[in-house]
Image 1 (spheres, rainbow, N blue to C red):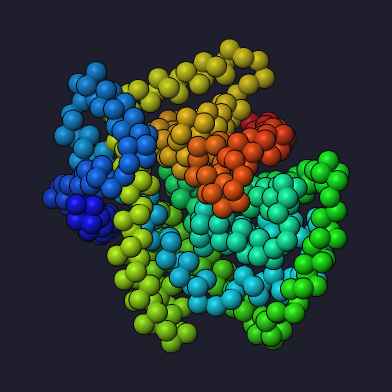
Image 2 (spheres, helix red, strand yellow):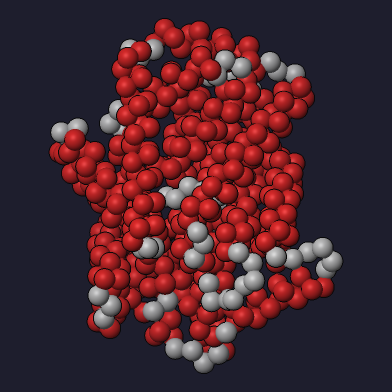
Length: 471
């Protein structure tokens, strides 16, 4: 039964993605109905594939959406057919983005980057800083899949360093750096969705987010220096010991440099292509990223003369990997129905009015101060940053705000950063804990609460100063 459900789920999600672009290019009522039926099928067969615990949040969102429709006399059929279509752009993005990882399996890019950079990473702070930068770049390709992959790589590099002090060193670098990507990386679905739906300037939002992300990395390095004294561990000595052993198994120097240059070209070519097409043609990010990724990835395998690898990877992805995304997709489909119900019932306006009431009631607090807490609070209730950003941005896109959309995006994504590094029930912390065997409380709250607090005030300082000068 589960195998049959997995096959139907995979076929339905592929039809859903195809119909997304069909209806995007040629909107028809028939196309919208097929899209809705495919989405509903995905949701139904997720019930078979997922354990109840994984279905708790999607069911919770569906019940709220149904309740709103019932009490506002909305159409339940419309909720099913039109509501599941709300997330077609984002689900298509999530379906396509993972294929970028196929390229990383073709060459030793990460080993080459670390080898070329190791002479510059000969102290604890430099190594930590470099590890966070590399993880951000890899997250561009692998999303949160970068966390276990980079952890295994770093753990192999620091193979004899397994104390809590060293797990703090490895875990906080990877978790915080991934969280910070939600501020600026185009391929991170929550960032792309927020920019697209709030019609923020892509260039300025990326620059702004990257600057704040860089500030967050420096802040993390600053916190590391205090932890090093607290744990009474000399990270630098340990790193230099491991580097000496690592050189014995190094790649050929010329080959490593070639791979680094090749990887830099791959990163810049994908980034610039998306950026140029978005700016020149004015197409939405969520619409252009998936086809560009497909063409770009296929182009890589053609240039490498390994097209058979591409189709082998594609078969494996469709047969095995797509079915494992049932929790992600069911969550987003349920969130789409909630957004549909909220926007069509007028409930969204009451929610926004409530935020503005808080703004008027509490001195020195404005909308941009409050927005991050929506992601933080909902994150502790089990909603991941992506779901929260989708819900909030989906509501705000229909609201006439006085604040620049770039600042609204930064406020929302800063909340998702804090949610990622603190919440014990969001996926990145769970993945890290499963990898390094520490508790989710230690990896999340205990290691990061002070960093999260300072980071919030750092971002708010920037936001409030910018808003003061822009008024």
